[in-house]
Structure formats: structure tokens, C-alpha cells
Length: 205
Image 1 (cartoon, rainbow, N blue to C red):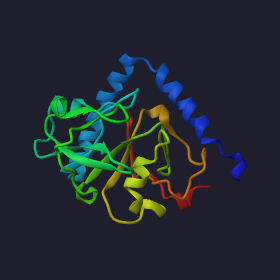
Image 2: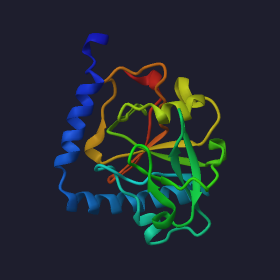
Image 3: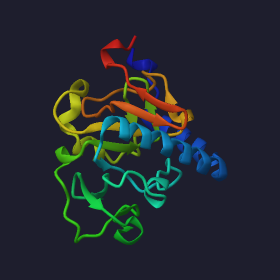
């Protein structure tokens, strides 16, 4: 069956181009819609410490959650790039406490100490594509996979609930690219159309 897989680099190139061509105005509207869906999801899950990201290069943008105010009891924790993994740091004022990091992605300033990732309730993860079985195709750096390596092998292990975030056109059927042993699956995917609970990988045809 391996010969039927698409090369990851080909899927990445295709999804990058589709995202690049996505009208900014429409992306803004759909991001705000997805933000409301994510807010409702976090309330339903009772999430208090939430790992999230500052959007770059066409990613789903959830900045409306903290710019407009949401649950006052919720703490947003942004990733700071370490040597091999991500360190999630609680941030109260993203506009003042985030700065461009080594990968040109806004990340917490150095004087904010990180939390242990197991202290997080939910982590929202960007991606170029996701599938119905929780498969995620990122940009290829492997930081999220290494950070949450305890979640490998079929969503097992301890740690926070992992939620993929993308536009609806980035949610694909399963089995388009090869799932490697080191790939970490997400539990849910949030899009502008709603929240999808991912199917167990063993159910894949």
C-alpha cells in the first residue's frame, strides 16, 4: 500500500500554495468563526491552561480570543522554541510579551518561565493539513512531535488534549501521506466549520 501514499513534500507544497491563494479577507472572517468555535470547545472541556500559537504565514488566526477577551479564568500559553522541543509559557499580554524568535515566529520573551507540558489542559496545534484520523502534516521541523512524544502510538500516554487547527479545506481524508512512527496524532481538529473528534487510526481502511 505504501506506493499509494503521496510524498509529504508534495502535500506540503500543495497546501502551502492553496493557503497562499486564500483571500486574506475570507481568512480573517473564517478565523474569527473558528475562534468562536474553539472558545466554545474550551468551555465545554473545562480547559483552564491552553497551549496556543501566534499565527504566521496564513495559519488559522485565533488572536481574537485574547484581543477581545474570553474566559477570564483561562491562561494562554505560547510556545518558545528550545533546542529540540517547545516550551509553553503563560502569557497575559501577547502584544507586549511576544517577540520574533529564532524561526521568525512570535514567542514569549525569555524572562517568562515555561510550564511543564503536562500542566496544560489543551494544546492547539497549527498544521498544513490534518486527516480524519488525527494525522498532522506540519512544516517539517518536528518540534510538536518531539514535544509530545509521550502521546505517540495511538493517542496513548499522558499529557494534554491535542487539538489541530486549520481551515476546512486543509482537513483531508486519511491515508494520503505515510504516517511515521514518530508522528504524533491530534485528538480533535477545529476548523471554521466545527470541531471534529478524530477516529482511532486502527479504523483506517
